[in-house]
Length: 211
Picture 1 (spheres, helix red, strand yellow):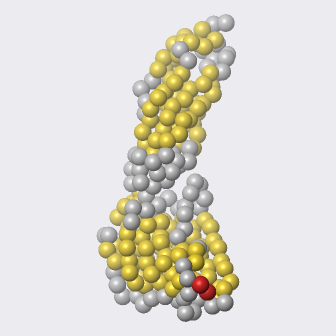
Picture 2 (tube, helix red, strand yellow):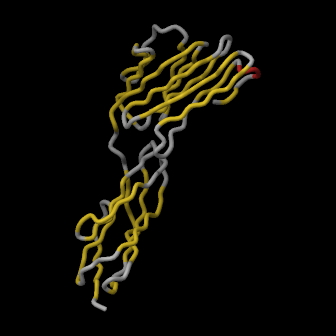
């Protein structure tokens, strides 16, 4: 929450959903009354509760969470569907949509929003696979690659390390447009040649030689 004009006559409520956080809330006591906001999410549903005190207004932005075919309900009534605002509820005006948010102006009162939609297929690019060509049997060795989030929203992809079969994985938080080097440390119990890869990259060969 942030202040636009003195005395909390106008304010902005714009939740930022990051990482694996699934809920958050905040409230501020003002001379006009209590301002509060709280959200909770699953993979494809976000609920947002907002309370605006008397003689105040707020611009409230609801995160799209990377969803498409979005529907928004307020108090059980549909106010947004198929990319368009559905008018009829008092106190809600000036709808707009950006890449990551759908925004409304709210008059004083309490509101309960529910946003739902369809998960987009995440766009992740893998590159720069690095692995040692030869390692002694029983020794640990590192495998790394660069992953990049090409989506317009934040992701929590599970990145998998494969050595003939999937043997390890980790969840890597990625903001929109962010790239990051991911490194695994592993060891193999059998000598000989093995195919090693990360994610969708073509495997590279590593030779595990006897000591």
